[in-house]
Image 1: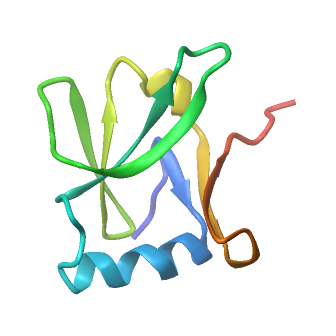
Image 2: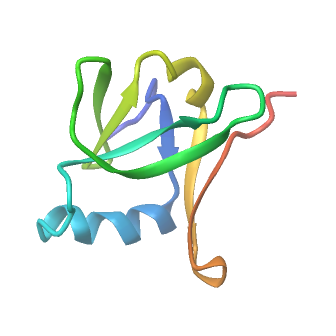
Length: 98
């Protein structure tokens, strides 16, 4: 499956840690949500489980059901979601376009 045009990208490590939850039905909510918290200039990324609201855009990226609030879409566009075992969790990174 090609993800050309997908708003965010999952690394292989992130997929390896999320897909078992998706396939085993062990997600506490039906979607993974990515967004911003605390404002867009000085804000931080958020990643968690959630249900869909009226403001959400729904995506299926590499079999992972994802939600992004359409008001935050421009701020998370191009974000890479990774899992780092030694850091004990997920982190989000927006690669520089320079």
